[in-house]
Image 1 (cartoon, one colour):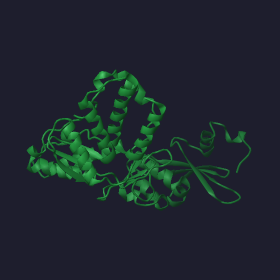
Image 2 (cartoon, helix red, strand yellow; image 1 turned 90 degrees about the vertical axis):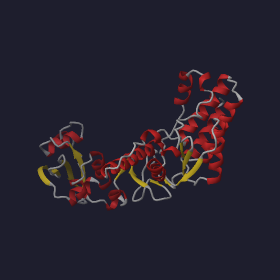
Image 3 (cartoon, rainbow, N blue to C red; image 1 turned 90 degrees about the horizontal axis):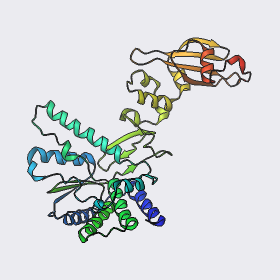
Length: 344
């Protein structure tokens, strides 16, 4: 595959897989019809859904009332039309060496599974006999999986000189249509649910899901999730800007990763001032503080008050340190504070 072709595919991938533009229901419907025809199936009932949650709700209702209406899970019947002609090792190397930026697909897959499992638990709580639909909802086609197959198939053809049949050409064409016009695809023999794209996807400079005071992922029906530099936050934290986060939340939050994010967002300086930190030891303008709570590991902070401005700086240090001088040494790569004379 030529370098120009690779760059063109990557640009298209970046444009579509991270797109928040609503799908065109008519074009999505036509794309699904072409895909089903390419693999020899009759046209399914096509459902356009506003979010993965909407997909789950509709599929759950079908499982409850008319399971036969779904038919079997296609399980990627239209994928890899020319894959049997090439060595998996070759194409995997070719694909792995490409630069692929972070996307929301894997995150949404995880969230969808959580959603399905919560519905199953709620049904079991109500003592309803309900089949577990996880196997039928697994492996949806996403823009990323479709892009991978399109790229690999084109690489087979251009780099290995593979001649493909008319049927394989039709499948490849259907892949491109699905990639261009659909979001997530939940394909069954008789029904195909197409999920609309999210209305918002927000990232930080390192391509991690991130937003401050608003959802990082948000769909048209309101299904949304909050993230702070890639860490998922409960709504009761995420809906506030970090400037509004409260130090008191640290005393009750049990999730260590969420606590770390809260500390990062609030800042040790505010934590020192807003929580009743106990002074363990002091040395010159430094103080070793500890915030105790029976439910979490103690938070130990090295606080320094600037003599000229009175501004407080604070750094977290290990909880096993017993003195301010020991904490200063830990911050400065085990150099004793007496050995450096410049202090601010």
